Image (tube, rainbow, N blue to C red; front, side, top):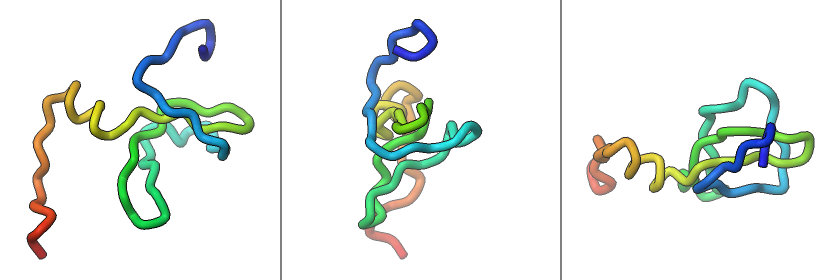
Length: 68
């Protein structure tokens, strides 16, 4: 819960982010996009997985992973 509201479809990390980071990408060390920052605490970052966001918004990839 944040501000008394339950957040669904979220992952909590063990690293902080700062106010204003909402909307920023969360990326693994190997460059794989995990999700989008939606909230932060002093010690954690909360993000929504990119697959869930894309599904909810009915997004389609605009770049073929095999193209250069």
